[in-house]
Image 1 (spheres, each protein chain N blue to C red):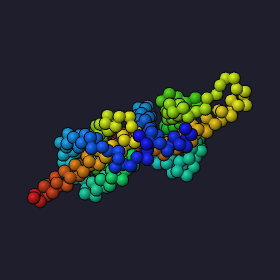
Image 2: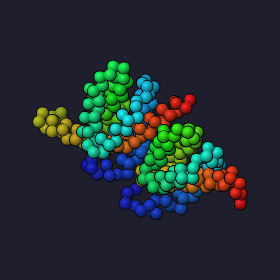
Image 3: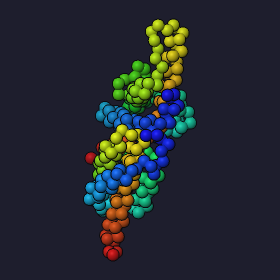
Image 4: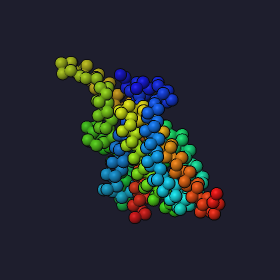
Length: 139
Length: 165
């Protein structure tokens, strides 16, 4: 595919549907990740920073490397168990993007990021919900 | 296709994202299997050098570090790390799983090297070798920062895992 193709043209309705179905399928795992992040008492700012990195990344591996760097810097050992399940989920996302991308490098690169952003929204949402519930602010 | 055009393609970005990442992770795992972890500041020194002076700067850093360490107790491990990087990035002929060979293989896949027919005279052959070397070094230089981004993050991740277990 021509690399000058706009991103809006990359994802056909059919591809978008497949992405949505995949995101639905990984939703339970995303819930668990968000819950674990709340249990480990990650700060809101840390989760927002993760979201920001994922939103602004231009390469999928930037996200993996960010998570690993967080583990490297973390003296309280909160990130290590979280990173293990996150990296496993990201591996699944990458494999799915490669499967759906059909050897099209541009599509694969963009799909990895798109799916990861969907995943991040799920995880962050459950983190903030679990955090509120833990603090007794149930809706 | 020229090397400059290739380095602008999504194919190259994907190569950095996937194959270079895999190569860096394997390199870290191989090193840590055989040697004790290196000091953090040794690794952190690498990206700024590449940012400022590229491949030439990294070559100088590696060679200086290899020749430097006089403290016999620390010498073995520090030399092991810089020797490892030297083998992985600079040494020719490049070992199979080195970064250098991974880049060479990628360039060959895309027919980016100039072929040198045996019939050509030695002057021409030398010219072609020089051009191909320039192509390789251009690609290698462009790959280094991302390679070390992968390398350093995985390195600290594994060291932390080891410390926690």
